[in-house]
Length: 161
Image (cartoon, rainbow, N blue to C red; front, side):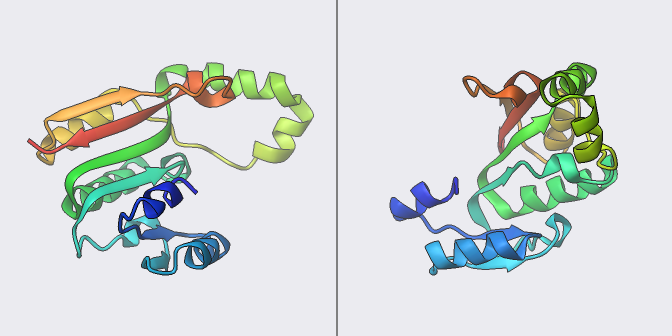
């Protein structure tokens, strides 16, 4: 959905998603794009794109090692920058869990999230990984007015040296 406005502006957009349903929607809405079904780790660094964007995916990764491999592939693919949106903040992990539990109730929280372990990240981890890959300008922010997760997540923008 966040790629559609770029598509309307004439930008070449493509994507990779584990959900065949979401890839199907993208193919229908933006048939000129290259839409692939697969895990993030299967990202092919070729061809290179100006920007590589990830939205709401890093929280589902199984380990920091897996995330590190994905970040490396993103860095190889991106000519001008990387944007990683909606990253769970390790600093506010306990607060985020408590807020969600309070919002929907303990029983519903357990039903929805009982078997789902999200991965949380520090800003330092991203800065360290991206700096090692030649990205000197790394910025963080997140502000979604009224968004429950806004206080507990951050975005990462990085551009090469």
